[in-house]
Amino acid sequence: MSSPIATISRIGEHEGQSVTVRGWLYNLRESGKLLFPIFRDGTGLIQGVVAKNAVSPEVFDAVKTLTQESSVIVEGKVRADKRAPGGYELDVSSVQVLQKVPDSDPYPISLKEHGVDFLMEHRHLWVRTPRQAAILRVRAEIIRAARDFFDERGFTLTDPPILTPAACEGTTTLFPVDYFEEQAYLTQSGQLYIEATAMALGKVYSFGPTFRAEKSKTRRHLTEFWMVEPEVAYATLDDMMELAEGLLSFLVKRCLDRRRNDLQIIGRDVAKLEKIEPPFPRISYDDAVKMLQEGHQTGALETKFEWGGDLGSPDETYLSSKFEKPVMVHRYPASVKAFYMEPDPQRPDLALCVDVLAPEGYGEIIGGSQRMASYDLLVQRIHEHNLPEEAFKWYLDLRKYGSVPHAGFGMGIERAVAWICGLEHVRETIPFPRMLHRLYP
Ligand code: 4AD
Ligand code: MG
Image (cartoon, rainbow, N blue to C red; front, side):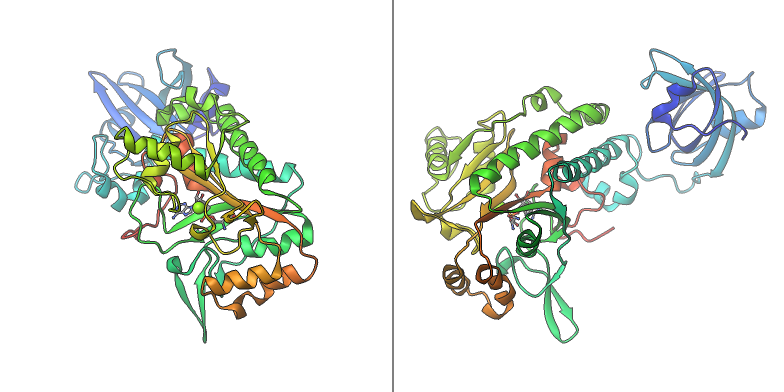
């Protein structure tokens, strides 16, 4: 094919010209002497028009018998058409079929509805559908925006290890790995390591895969997920709340600016996203408990929440449905949080921590805290949590050699994608989700 190669998302640049599109057949309609194949190339969809009297019988037949997801290279002239979804149509002049999906073994995902289990079994193919592809583009945009946000603010990216000798977020959710003669675990969070790099570089962040072996079967839990974690020397809890609301607002705005079309394909109500800008509401854990108890009184929550407990998924759903912006819940009881959190000097039974709950019932998307600066208290906490002191020797060194107040947080990329895209479940936010009972494909 002699015409220049064009991508569908930018086909308008070639209006009136002949172009080559390389992709797959998405769908085919027929109307008398006209064929209307819809092609996709990974950037979008375009409808082709094949008129029997305008092409050779071979081309007409090749298109007429084309099966869903057959790979094709098509040549045709780009024509503006206001009624067409992308604004353009392709008057097809020739077609080269690379591989035809056989009629005897058709593409398993038809354009009709399929059950979730079936789609998950065929995730390697499901990612081709326009909605799934749009979600993956938004995911990529969020990841890029998160990096830009920190890079532009003087943070240095420092990658923590994935194989680790000890727990960060508690011992109950570790994936063990046989590391030669030693016991290792897949990391739950890069935090402890970027506390070290923060003492070296001031403002750092990490962005990588993290693992939780929790047996949670909710719409928010993956066993493998990606986390972006900033860590800042000389920072406090308040600094982190400001950074968190800045980050989330930046991510949303970036998606509205650059991925509006994808959000539309996904069916997201963008009016809700337009409202996301700082400041976000901040409530204490104590206030949250009052709200949850009211929720129980009105019958919205089944069980009565008692002060001292950790928020469960239904609690977070309830709280976050009460706000139009993400809400920042701070100062939880230290007993329900990780060992490394600094106690509130005013009330040492509370931790200087924050969970950011996304609106519309999405629940926690960010968890963070000010870190414990005292060597003695940290040793005590490590013992209280039954953690092996030996494995934390290096971490304790950070409190021996120039300890400073410092703070950070982690944002789960998949939770952010689920919220920004308005998805029911995190399984659609990552190309190949890993969940309880899901290791294939
Ligand atoms: O609240 P978490 O457990 O916090 C930490 O890991 C801290 N060490 C982070 C830090 O301070 N540097 O996890 C942080 C975020 C959660 O708010 C959530 O968005 C996401 O990671 N997350 C999960 N996402 C998907 N599936 C899971 N099982 C998740 N567990 C946590
Ligand atoms: Mg958390």
